[in-house]
Amino acid sequence: MNTTLQTYLKAQLDTLHAENLYKPLLTIEGRPGARVNVGGRELINLSSNNYLGLASDPRLCEAASNAALTIGAGSGAVRPIIGNIALHDQLEKLIAEFKHVEDVLVFQSGFTSNAGTIPTIMEAEDAIITDSLNHASIIDGCRLSKAKRSIYQHCDMDSLRDALIASKDARKRLIITDGVFSMDGDIAPLDQICALAEEFDAAVMVDDAHGSGVMGANGRGTAYHFGVTDKVDIQLGTLSKAVGVMGGYIAGSKSLVDFLKQRARPFLFSTGCTPATAAACIRGIEIMRDDAGLTERLWENTRYWQAGLRELGFDLGVTQTPITPVMVGDEAKTMELMRRLRDKGVLALAVVFPTVGRGKARVRTMPSAAHTKADFDEALAAFKEVGTELGLI
Ligand SMILES: *Cc1c(COP(=O)(O)O)cnc(C)c1O
Image 1 (cartoon, rainbow, N blue to C red):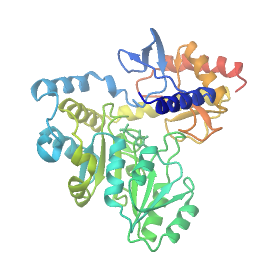
Image 2 (cartoon, helix red, strand yellow):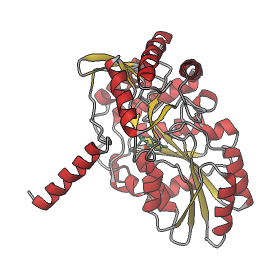
Image 3 (spheres, helix red, strand yellow):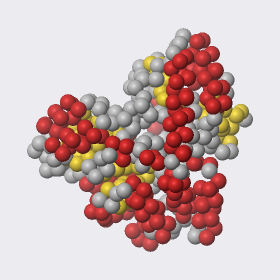
Image 4 (cartoon, rainbow, N blue to C red):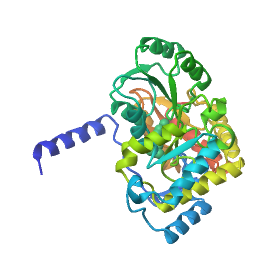
């Protein structure tokens, strides 16, 4: 082994430990539900993106196992060679109908949907105009593109207008925003963004990883919520969060999907999802389509959880969605809050630099449709005790 590399790695790790930024990887023993077993203990799970509780839903598990038994464990090749199975086509058709768009392309993940789409459609003569708090996978997608990039201040329409004015010489322009911002839980003003896009002849892309299954009727997403489905050129959704499985998709026009199928590199050069994954995703989307009650329960639980925390005196920042950050600021104190909550049976993970800025550390909690009032009450009691000990409330 190369000593220079190993010395570098050890020094980097030492720095992370010294700055309280080192995050140990936890392991769930058994099912990923509202309560999980970690390290031999049952904990109330307030850190998962499993918004609707579908990740361990027996209907999805049955669909997955049937597909594996009848079709196979894998699809055998990348989709454009001979790995495109009927379940891939069915899943795409189902999502397109559900979201009221012309066409959909499913990728291996939300991350690869961004990394595969942005550089494919935005070239050196173009300009990408991107919100300062956009997700890491958007940032990486932009880095893979040769287009000029300008960053506007988070959800600030004056700043977006300035960026549009400054980029008027670009051949074409794409505004990219998260639909729901993953760390703060606020919602992009898509109605205003679409109006500006129209005024300046720019296209709009919304990464709706945290809006899928959460926003709009039956969880159809943030564009649907604002009534701007026909004004948003590209919607990105994930199948890994509310849908409970794994994968991502791009929803938009037939030409967009047709072109991505010819040129998007993760589609061309990386194998598509397994039969089990596709079948479970289909079942998950069908359940969302047929039962608005799941999304409604998610929001009802969100109101209960957030009211409880606010009553105790916690600062939840600017959230408008189930994403519920408990703002702390200091990294060491945030890690201590996480540790003490866990000692009391509550799993609420700390989010620290580089996921958020330095000094903006928080414990991020995520209520779901699967939690019960008893789960929340028990967790609130723990937050009250630990929050008092640490002087947060
Ligand atoms: C989680 C997330 C992704 C990535 O989705 P995966 O399917 O887990 O790869 C992309 N964008 C945003 C905004 C996200 O929150």
